[in-house]
Image 1: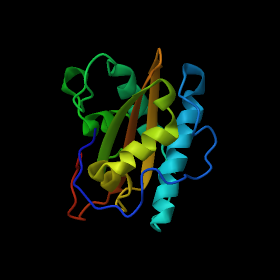
Image 2: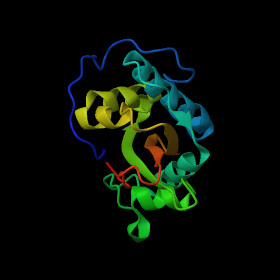
Image 3: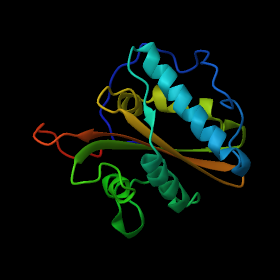
Image 4: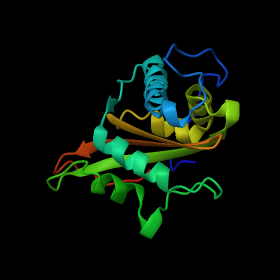
Length: 177
């Protein structure tokens, strides 16, 4: 689930992927850090294929993503609306991203997988197979990434936040696309 616009792809979702440590291991409570790293690695590999720069891991975005992943009930549909009416932008700001009154542009994508399908590679392939999510993750306007992963039983919930600070006077504003 994501909020973004569609873009065509020339890459098959089933093509062999890059070698990212832990990418083919289902997410567990013990492998959350490795799963987060593998997701970022796979997204960066897809970006590199398109000559886009790698995203920089940002602890504030990871904090926002991890907190939100924890709040999502695996028995309910995924939604970008959080507890108390929080939004991707409010969660990212609350985590301290772009402090000092600077604006930022951000986007969030969500996913949920079960059992053997709860691998980083499978999740990223599904995201890249969906035009809206692919456009978000492969946008040149974002420079930072934070990944949240929570497992409950054999169900893994994934949250990816991508963002970039916006300089004053650039004409850009905050966005949750």
